[in-house]
Image (tube, rainbow, N blue to C red):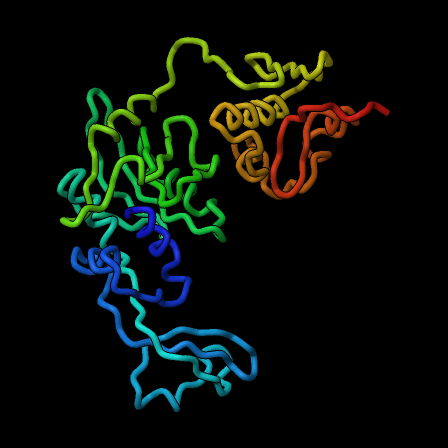
Length: 302
């Protein structure tokens, strides 16, 4: 039930009103305060700009409706019941359960600091990150960096966690792994959260890099693929080490912006040649579609 709710939560406030129904799921969300009660809504399509809109309206107002984007006349569709998510419900519930606290909004409609909690010997700041598919996460990362907490755990509203949100002292966890919705309301498992936080600090032992198809020296100076080696210098080492870090975290093709930032490069770099001008570099590193990766198969040498 929680994931179905999060699908609605992630659509707000950017999506339209959400069609309601009489299912047990919908009634439960209204009863626990996660959704506003359903109201009559009208879907329309503009005859001028073709924009489709769904909005609350009453019968006597229907004929006076105009397009909210261009002001043109609209064609009305059959009315239906639609509801809107209570945006403050989820962060408020989580803060109360974690530390009997109030959430602090760090990025409007996107990021909340829920609580500062003690887990064993660790003091951890816990956040809620509302992840929308159109998002760039740079603003969120900047807010997290500015919050200056030593250890940070992000509860994310999607199961697929962007690699950019994890790093040294920071971990992103899908909220559905530590919480659920029951008829009585939201239930958060502190035990499951503690289990996830237990792995937040790196082990002093040398990590095992499972699943790698490449070899990389500890200092990042030598990358080896298919028996061939590429020597790396200065910030190039940090660049390739960042790719390897994302790979070990389950993201073999991290976003270029995250790798550049992690390695200390400017996001204004738009091509691989700006990182390294040597012709052999692109043989080992793939750079396309906003992502970067270490190649499984080397490109032919010229």
